[in-house]
Image (cartoon, rainbow over all chains, first blue to last red; front, side, top):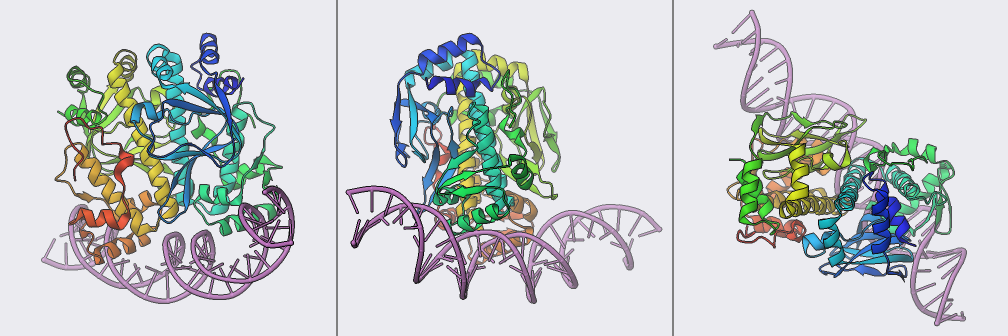
Length: 243
Length: 243
DNA sequence: CGATTCGTTGACGTCCGTCAAGCTAAGTGG
DNA sequence: CCACTTAGCTTGACGGACGTCAACGAATCG
C-alpha cells in the first residue's frame, strides 16, 4: 500500500512505464511504523537495507559539538532515505523522524539488482537524487540571502508543493514544533517563535498548537518569492503540479 | 591530457579498474580554454554536451532579484558540471568560471551510452554526484550555524583537501576576489574583508593581492572544526587523502 | 499533584549589512 | 609622461536582524 506513494513520486520523473510501476509494487513490501523523534539511521552506520518514507515526516540531520542540531533536508512521503549507502559506504549524517512515520525496507541486494537491470527505474532514482540536490541548493540560497520570515514562508511553500506532487493535497497544514522549525532554518527557537507570530500577524498562516496551516498559498508564494522550477516537477506525465 | 585529472577524481570512488581508466581516456578528448568570469552554461539551457573542469575554478550560481549572486558550489579540476541535464531536462542554475579554466566536452549520447553499458564508470559518476550532495549538506550546516570566520576557514580546508585528492597538492593557495568569497559564504563584501583580515591577524592565512595561502593547514582545521568525512575520500584505492 | 515539554515575551548584546569615503594598482588615451 | 578611469581593497559609523539569557504561562502526563 505504501508503495503507491513511492511510485507516484518517481512517476514525476517522467521515466516510468506501466511495467515499472508493477515492478515497484512487487519490490516495495515490508513496511513498518516508527514513532516520532527516533532515528532511522545513525551517522557512521552502514545499514543493510535502503529505506523510503511512505507516511509522516523525517529529516536528515547532524548533531553539532555545541549540542544543537542542524536539519539539512526534509523527507516526505515517497522520498528515499539512503540510496547513498550502497554507493558511499557509510552515512555522513543521521536520519530521524519528526512525526510518527511509516517506513519501507528494501534489501540492499534488491537495490543493486535494480540499478543493474531496471534502467528506467534506475534513471528515476537518479532523478530523485538530483532533485534532492537541487532542493539543497535552493535551501543554501535561502539561508544565505533571505531574512528568516521569507525563509520560513519559502519552506512552507516547498512542503506544500512536494506534498501535492505525491497526491497529498489535503495537507496544506503541517505539525512541527518551533524547535524543529528553528533547526531547519538555522535560527534560534526564540527567533523562530518571533518569525512565526510575524507571519501570523500578516495573516499568511494560522497557528494552533503545533498545527500550522496556510489559508492562501498564493499570498505565501508571493511573499517568499517562491519559484518552483528547482523541484523539477514539470515533466510529470499525467499528474500536474498545480497547487 | 585533462582526462587524467577526471580519472584521478573518479578513482577516489574505489569503483574503477584499469579498463575503465582507458575508457575514460578515450572518451574525454575535446578540451578548450575559457577565460575567467564567463558562463559555461546558463540557467534554463538544455545543452547537448556534458562538461567537466580540468583546470581552474568554476562555480554553480544563481542571480538573485536584488542583483546579488549566490554561489552554491565550487567546481574544481576533475569535477563534472552538469550530469543533471541528461536526467533533469533543464538547468535550474548557471555555471560560470571564477578563474581561467580548461573544460572538456562530452557528447550527451556518450554519457547515455556510458550510463547503460559501463556500470563501474556509471557507479563512479553516481558516487561523484552523491559527494557533491554531501558537500552541499556540509555547506548548509556551515551557513546555518557557524560564524563567518569559521565558515571561511572551513571553506579553505575543503578546497585544499579536494585539490590534494586529485593530486594538486602544491596548491594550498587560491586566487579569488573578496567579492567571490562573499558570494560563496553569503555575506557582504565588506564583511568578507573584515573576516579575511581577522584570519590574517590570527596568522591563519597570508594574503597578497588576491592570493590567499595557508601556512599551517592543521591550525586552520582546528579553528574551523573541519571534519573531512563528508568528502568520502577514505575509499581511495592507492592514492591517499593525506594533507 | 509535580514534572516535563513547548510556547511566549522582554532586555540586551553581537554579528553582519548598508552607506560612504578614500585608497591602491592597472590600464587607457591624450 | 600624465590625467583619467576602473576594479578591487580598506576603513569607519550606524542600524537591523538575530542570539542569548531569563522568567513566566499553558498543556500534557505519570
